[in-house]
Amino acid sequence: MLRIHPIFLFLQRAIAQHVRYPELYQQLLQGETFQLCSLTPNTERGRVAVLAQPIFDDRGVLGDLWLINQPHYGFSDQDVRLVQQVANQSAIALRQSHLYQAAQAQVKELERLNRLKDDFLSTVSHELRAPMTNIKLSTQMLAIQLRSLAIDPNNPVNRYIQILQNECNREIALIEDLLDLARLDATSAPLEVAPIDLQQHLAELTASFQERAHNQQQKLILDIPAQLPALSSHADYFTRVLTELLHNACKYTPPQEQIIVSAWAVVEDAPGQRRRRQCIASAPHRLLVRVTNTGVEIPPEERDRIFDKFYRIPDNDPWRHGGTGLGLALVKKLTERLGCSLQVDSENRQTSFTLTFPPSAIAGSEPTTDS
Image (cartoon, rainbow, N blue to C red; front, side):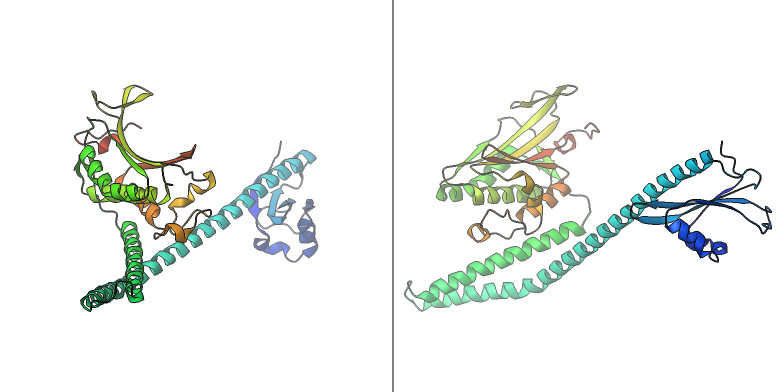
């Protein structure tokens, strides 16, 4: 049994009374344990027996463990082994603490850099918005003037004006997306929600993409049951999410493939038993909206990164598909604000983005706490 009156843990810099004896610390720095008995009586305890144990691991000495006892007791071999075990555990804890502190410092630095980047992009976007709008208006006026001069349609000037207008529109879209992201990051106010008739809303939304899909030899399909409860959500945010997902699907779906927009409710008939319902006869447990496109897959290692700002899957040609590279980043932010989950599934030459709305988002439902 270890019989120690008081136990003290000191760091090397705190043991001022032993600085005068560098040979003692040399032993500690070499990972050696030693005992001694003080010749000069301590003012509080008289003569004492001292055990010094270094706290170290394979990377070096982290500190010292000093113990004192009455001189007639001393320290047995069993006492020394016990102290060594305590020192070993202390070394592990100290090293883990150092690693945790280093990791936390890196996280804070990355967060700081990310804030600086967002602030910079927001500032630049605000500064560019006005001049880009003026450039757009000027190109429009220039195009009108050229038409009034009855210039030959094959004149290269017309093509140059069209290129200028297209690039101007692209830059304005990029600026607007950046500003939208900045606004989403800055606001936390509750959303104003209203009932949304999914059958009507999704039909109108997909209708605006039918011509584009037809021109690209894609088939756009709407799969919605006849009876579906209304969704209680922010209409503009919900529309923006679906619009970005449809833009993305039209952009990457090969010719002769399909784009499917579907919605359904999940009803929980018994605990743990859920099934998809086309006709709702009881209170739905979840509302789901999905955009699926066939003929393309996202590699598993890329699925988490596709929501990063400006990120593009390496195998795809960014100039071929165009866009700002912010669409899915906006989708992620908007779904977080809407309070729904977003899941990506991609296998068997098919990719799906699924929005899952909780019971509280079903119009007319009472707030619930089930999972």
